[in-house]
Structures are given as C-alpha cells and as structure tokens.
Length: 145
Figure 1 (cartoon, rainbow, N blue to C red):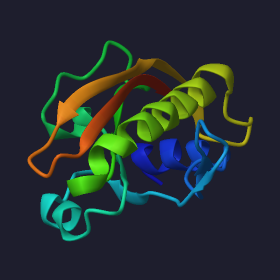
Figure 2 (cartoon, rainbow, N blue to C red):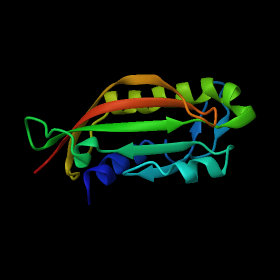
Figure 3 (cartoon, rainbow, N blue to C red):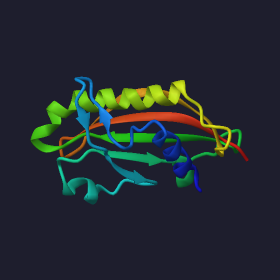
C-alpha cells in the first residue's frame, strides 16, 4: 500500500469520505476521490460533483524530507462548479475544516503503517476555470518503516 492510500484509509476512518454533514446540519454526498494526481477532464465532466484529491508531491521530483519516513502530503477539495459554486463555497470550506480537525485531533491505530498526520490548516486556494472553489490542506505525514 502506498503513502497516498495510507492517508486515504486514515481519513476514511472518520467517515468523511462517505459523505458528511454540512454546517446547516444537512447530509451531503461523498465527494469523488482521486488519488495521486488530478484528472482535470474528469473534474470538468460533472459540475454538480465535489472532488477530493490526495497527492504526494515528494513522488514528483520534490525534495525528500530530512527523515525518509516523513512526507508532505496535500489534500485538495474542489467544490461544485457552474451556477452552484457560490452557494457551495461555504459548504466545502466547512468540510475542509472537518477534515483538518480530524487530522489534527486523531492518530491512526497501532496496526497502521502511518504514525500520524499533522495538518497546517485548511485554506482557500482559489477558483478554477469552471468556477469551483478549491480548498487545500497540507499535512506532514509520518510513516512507520
């Protein structure tokens, strides 16, 4: 299992990848999960679907951290596009905070090959060409050898 899958499995224990409850208390469907890289054509296919992307920049030629078991991981959350984007912004901002809080307050179980993930907070990264708001969470993740 690679590092991206380990981080995804840890986040999945929160239930946040199966759907979530928004800030108004309404249930929201699960986002589409993409791991390793962003498929922008897939993203553009359906403006009504949110996307949750996990990437490991260290596998793309980035500098290797001081300790080989530490990686800087990035979680990118894309809201709905088109006419829905402005209304969806607050919902995905809250969702990004829920993911950030889960990472900040929890650690993987002892059976996991992942030791911990320390997020640096959720931030608005901007909007894409489809009008989707994009939130980003960068986390330092430590893995057991």
